[in-house]
Structures are given as C-alpha cells and as structure tokens.
Length: 186
Length: 260
Image (cartoon, rainbow over all chains, first blue to last red):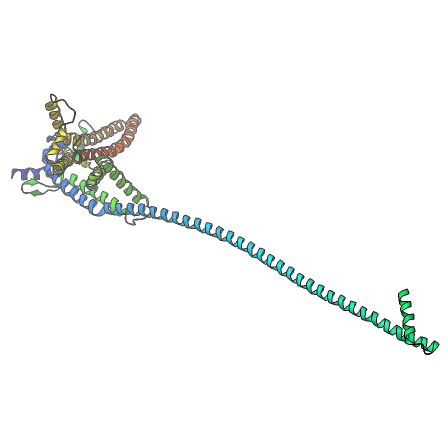
C-alpha cells in the first residue's frame, strides 16, 4: 500500500509545497490523477446521460413536437374555416340570386294574373253592357213601333171624333181614307 | 498560498500550468485504485448540474411560445438533433441522447472553464481520451453488431487496384485506430493552449503592473490581448464541442453504413 501512502502525502505536500506538483511534471500528463479522473468522468457522464435521455430530452422533444402538431392543426383549422366561409358566401349569393329570381317570377305572375283578370272583367262588363244596350235598343224599337201603331189608332179615333164633331156622323171608312192620305203625305 | 506566491516570484508572477493541477478534495481508494474526489471531479459535477438545470428547469413551463431559456434549450436540442440526422442518418437517431450529452458536457466544460478560478475538465487528455475511446469502442461495437464481419469492409475502399489494396487497407486501419487519438488530442490541445495563452498574458499584465506607472501603461496591451483572447476562447469552446460532436456523428455514420 505504498500507493496509499503516496496519495496521502500528495494531499499534504500539494497544499504545502507547490514544487511537489511540479515534480510530477506537466499536470495533464500526471498519470497519478488518471484513475480518479476516469472513474469520476464515467460516473458523472453516466448520470448525466441517464438524466438527459430519460428526463430532459423527452420533455424538450415533446414540447417541440406538440408545438409542430399544434401549428399544423391550427393551420388546418384555418384552412377549413376559410373553406367554410367561402362556401357560406357562395351559398348566400346563390340563395340571394334565387330569391331575386323568385321574386321576379312572382311579380311577373301576379302582374300577368291581374292583367288577365282585369281583361276578363272588362270583357264581361263590356259584354253585359252590349247585351243591355241591345235589349234596350230592342225595347226602344218595340216601344217605338207600338207607339207608332198607337199613333195611327189614336189619330183615327181623334180624326173620327173631330170629323164627327165637325160634320157629324162621318162614316168610319171615309175617315180612315182621309187619315191615311194625310199620313202618306207626311 | 503564501508559499505558492513565494515560489512564483522566483521567475514569473503566475505559473501558467498551475490551473491544470489536480488536487484531492476527498481522498478515496477503491480496491487499491485512487478514486479521490478531486477539483476535476468537482467541476465535472458542476458541469453536469448546470447542464441538467439548464435542460430541465428551462422546460419547466413547457410553453408553446417559449421563454428565453426554453428557446435556448430547444435550440440546442434541434441543433444536435439535426446534426445527428444529417450527418449520421435517421437510423443513428437512437444515439441522439448520447451525442447530445457529449456535446453539452464538453460545451459547458469548455465555457465554465473560462471563468476565473474554475477548472477546465476538458483540458486533461485523460478526460478527452476517455470520451473519445468511449465513442470509438461504441461505434466499432455498433458497427460489428449491425453488420457483423461486413463492417470490416469499411477498410476496403471500392475501386482500388488489387496491387495497392494491402497498402490502402493498412492505411485505412491505421487511420481508423488513430481516430480516438486525433479526436481527443484536438479538444485537449485547444483547451490547454487557450488557457495557457490567457495565463501567460495575465502574467505579462502582472509583470508590467509591478513596474509602476510606466508599467501600468504597458499593461494595457496584454490586457487588451486577454479580452480579445477570451472572446476567441468562447468561440473555440463552442467550436471544439461542435467538432467533437460532429466527428462522433461521422464515425456513427461509418458504423451505420460501412459500405463507403
């Protein structure tokens, strides 16, 4: 265990007399320090590797992947929303055009229907009026004819009465002859 | 400490190598092997704690819109993730946690080492070599596990004349075996050189400072140099961590697809 002794001495001499450190030469090539450096490097590096691979890196990786997914998802949603908006606008415009067309047809139909009705009523009224006019004309003609017929009878009677008053007993046949001569002269 | 100062006054105000000295905090022996808790171990623990705190606490809220620290942690994650995927392929992503740990450990060791009084874990060849040999053995074993004997086809490039084949294979094998050396020495040497340079310029500042008023003026130049070098060292710290990680990714690609 001479090495043990040397190690213990190394501690005391190093702090006390720095030449001791120099005596071993260039510090990085001091082989006495190799074993402890290797052992501690293996321990520390091993622990650090486990910490990184089990704890730190999965967390960082998850955050990065989550962010990437989220950005992709958001973009997808935005595209989807834009598509929805576009289709909604298209549907609105289509509906508007349809409504406009329908309103136009309805107005046209109503106008046509009203026109037709008005025409029909007008025709009916005209027909009724024409019938009434014809009827009235017929009755006028009849009345005129009967009136003219009555005029003759009355005139005969009046003429007979006048002649009777003037001439007394004028026979009916001569009176008739006289009246007809007058009427013809008219 | 007084003895140290006395010793330093002899030739140079600061010993540029003193910052690399490993001293024991808690002496420990396991089966006759020295496993003492040293200042190096302490700073390894500090680095691990900082990395863990940064990557775990920053994600506390797990916000969809990240805060400053969360954004930084996510940036590191995506940076290493893309590095592994682009350089080693999709199949190598199961090694992503390892490469991430490697990068974060080296990066934070380098950065934390720049703070005054801090110990730079990666300025010791044994640390960088242990990391590099772990990568080397891991990559080699993965390659043999995935491809069996065919993995050694890595050493036989296609389209090479048969006459040259023994030479080329020998070169390929040597370059493959020397990988952990170049891999580790690159990081170690960068850290070591950077810290020595900083310390040497700091020594100049102290030397000039001891000269009085004229010295104070003379100290401005090395002081400005230290500021510039510190900025450079921050770059080197990040760059070397990046280089270490990306080389690991390239070695991993060889293990995944040895047919090149």
